[in-house]
Image (cartoon, rainbow, N blue to C red; front, side):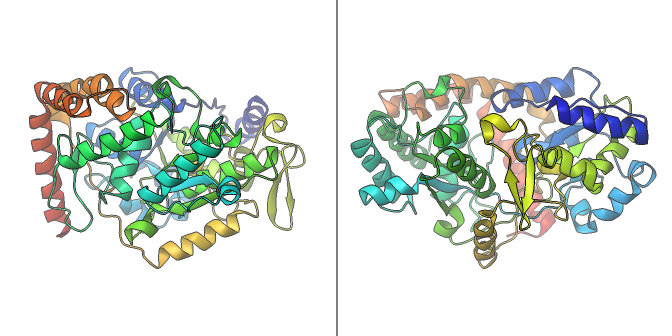
Length: 452
């Protein structure tokens, strides 16, 4: 990483009279540190944004600079490069606060499993919860030293949200335990405390009791993908196609005879929503001391092939080569020094400069299948205004960590009583007020957009 940063700065200092330092927030820390960066007043010139990182909410709070007037002055090439519909897609209250990525993809959940083990033991292909559970049972029986499924510490995402997606057909990852389906978006209600949540919690408890995932999962710091790659786990519940492709290639670099399978949740649900323009972007925080220069630098990252390829793939001939039009890593993940997209530069991907491994051909084929069941994303454009319930929101965060996460991780013996305790504590923290305010905003958004 240091070598890449030095090479970028050599060009940036000569061409923009600027130098940069790239900093990555670890997944397990991103929520807290992201909040701290935007509230502390620390000078930050560029910051990753995404719908899942609450871009809409932070933009409504005034955390980012308005870019409408700055774009034509500081980065006219970047402004022309990004299509108008994508600029319009990231607007909040009519204004642009982030630069969207132009790489079009589906970032949908899906079952991931060791296909070589599935074939070896004649296990079912995971296409729904029942077949996935049968696969996990087979792994537990035949490979007792491999954890059947990697869950990780973020059980809310890897268990609750995945189950809400594939089984409950949730319209999006709504906060505060709210649930609305794509078929009936205006029928918004509380999932927390419902019979559906109780059934899901008992499912996860069963997985835990049967040893499909560790009792220590909440304390693990390992990435789920890494556990697939090194063979300590045999499945993931809810990963997306791009991460699956990375895991597949990294796994086969180390273990050429191993194979991964993937089945998208949209195939089970019958519809797919493509990525929204807000999914990957970069904004300029209000604390920036060099907004114009930062935007000019970001224009280089996106539109200049030298900057783009260097930060996405490293130095050609050192970190990678291009063979028959495909990317090939030199060495393996442990020796390379800068694997493909090591900077996690998802937001400045430029389709004209992107390099893929041969396995990406299958990803594109899956994208074409998803195109056939494509429906518009009617959730991600919603911008929540949480200004009137900040204190309650913070209190609910703590309640979830104390009472909901252990339930999800299968650590509470009496699930009925545990859920009742969680809901009681959530209500004392202000759940009813927060849910009522969120529901009011959501229904107003549907009416404004003409969505029924």
